[in-house]
Image 1 (cartoon, rainbow, N blue to C red):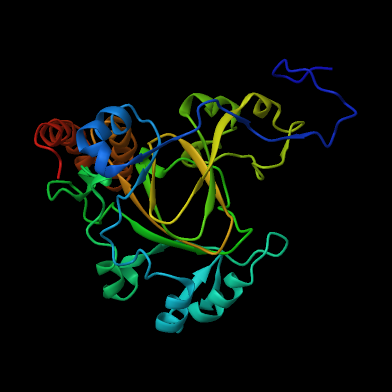
Image 2: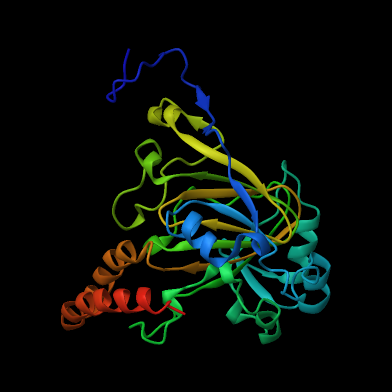
Length: 306
């Protein structure tokens, strides 16, 4: 028996599952002090190649300061929402510290740090050089609302990000690990055909519900998928380029900060996604935004984009 894709399938193996194949070579780990901005741009940022950068956030007060105990003691009364349920941060931290793979705690994710007390933003400033240039931070960028999001993720052992995805609007993702350890799984864009993207505006998400135990009867092409699996530890910054699929699971109580970004390497894809959003709001603006962004992209690429 074969599937509609032509891949042989054993009708007796209705519970057949698979994990992704690890690509040879893994992921580079480079220290910022020896890599430098030019080599980083040439070897990773411009060619859209993931890398783990060491030492990029050594200047952050948050590194060594942001721990579960710190948030529980200083900000335990803060209200947060996880999957539609309201929590006080203190009791949530207690639950996170008791988390296990068998009984994972709720995962606080995509928490906008700008909505928290201002001193927390000071602890993670300035952003590391490896996140720049970031065109979204330019004063010339035509958006009423900021499109740069600095977000916090706090979770316990066994918790996982809910889906395999690449970042909305084809932005880059920079993930700075402050406490604990995570395991990431990433797939390059050329693997998209094996990852079952959803249709329409959710095309950046995979239809596969559990990437660690994929039902090959439902998703037979996944048997061909080749990803890279690796760990991220405190003080390390992960660059996930635009269009790269990624997800993560937490190995121990963990605190991460992320920022999204756009530069010359992904600006054309970002522009393609952004213009239809503007068009839904105003036809006139839609007619003007595309040529403006084209000129802006050239200008920012010539003058650094900072």
